Structure formats: structure tokens, C-alpha cells
Image 1 (cartoon, one colour):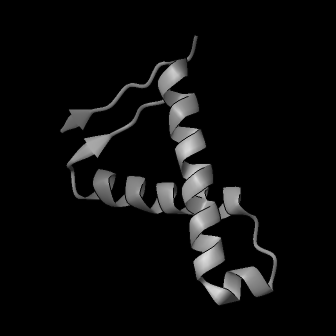
Image 2 (cartoon, helix red, strand yellow; image 1 turned 180 degrees about the horizontal axis):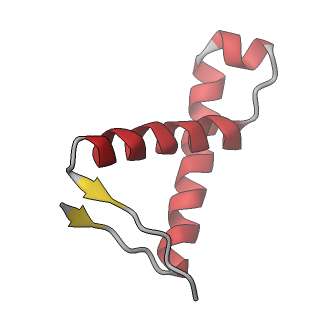
Length: 67
């Protein structure tokens, strides 16, 4: 299993990318836009679903690394 460790710069870049991607998805999907679902929620949900699939399939894991 591949272990992915992110430092603080990678984590900020990933968060910014997911925020941007959530904004695009929110704009494209009419239901999300109608009910005012925020972009960070959509981006975070996409990340959590992808992370869950990768971990369950035994492909990759992202352990939480404390300072």
C-alpha cells in the first residue's frame, strides 16, 4: 500500500485545489447551487470519498502526521 505524507505546503495546495474544484462543481450542478451548498463542503466531500475508496481498495493511505 502506498503511503502519502503531505507537508504543510502540500496540504495548503491541496486545500486550495479542492476549494477551487468545489466551486466549479457547485457552479455546474444546479441542485447544489439552488440550495447554496458551499464550495469547501463539496471539495472536501470529493476528497473524503476518493480517500475512502483508495484506502478500502488497499491502494493508498494518508496517515495523519502531527507536528
